[in-house]
Length: 516
Image (cartoon, helix red, strand yellow):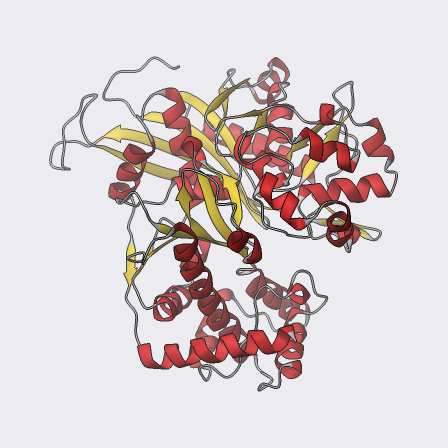
């Protein structure tokens, strides 16, 4: 740890990689000065400030028929973030850490070399594989072991697809490293598996926290591929001598935080109460609550909930919802067609459109990776006998209203699974809260307050777990207290209750109709 006085700021560096962009964020934890609610000193109230020093796109690359992550470009951008931090005068960085999306991985051979660019989870090579695995291992057996939601791109299905294709990479692989583990290995030369991300693979036993060797045997995947999972907050070495020489920086310690970005986002939820509901809102929407033990009931299986590892030995009981991917893909398609509408313009058009014109199921498989998202929305409306939207504003309004109503479904099911009569409201974190219309729609749909903030939830959660690992923050509740007093939280209160209640009834009818 860097030597400093009790009045100095503790500085750490977080890399938060999302499915469409990445960012490097400097965190400063410092005592409040006179007139700010405290005085200097080790026991004084403290404030966390963040400074984004580097942002970069994370564009997948199509090669032939397959979609990959440009992993070496991500490594380059992380190195640029380290250099920019040093050039900005942040020479006393006490640690750095990386979080990212889940399920994807790289394969490394016995000499430590990466065998190829990782597949993107939206690549089509896993089509039909989930159903094939279910014929070998029942859904009930798999859920009882792992507690993980059934999604067609989970690591288990990616591995089985490679096995089925007789992949040379898989045959030559010595170790499997999840995306943050892989990038961290490139920086330090040390291989370590972090537990929150490991839990998303659908290969980790939810009760033991260890790899399910019996499951791996059934799939004919060698257990030696997988390193024992480590708890969030584990020391993971330091920048290697080669990286330090290349970048001209000291050997900064590296920490394995909650490396699944949702684990970091949940750590940043500024809840004062012990029991709360959260929505991490971005490309994906992840809605649920923290629990101390996994919920492995038949009802959780039937509702396709997941029990992912959380910071501080908790579980994140939640459900993945398709999220703002629907809006992002609509915009990308319209950009290609020359419309050139910004996200704020799309939201403004949606606000002007007629309410409740039609509804979609955001989690319909057709929305996972369509060729043309706006046409996919129109097709869903057409086959369910609804009004077919024609304009961008109509399409985006239908998407946002449907997302909000789906949030209500999942929130109420979460309450049922944990035996809570009613959460007092919903904490929303992540970049999606910049969409104020979605926040208001969500409050309207659930009929209770929405507390939106902080925006950079995953990055802030990454930072506070580093501070916990370094001993600057005593635990998760103190971290949440600091976050709550450091960042603005916007409150949205429900409006138009009667209209939204009727819309919820119609939404459920449409979803049921689409299933039959």
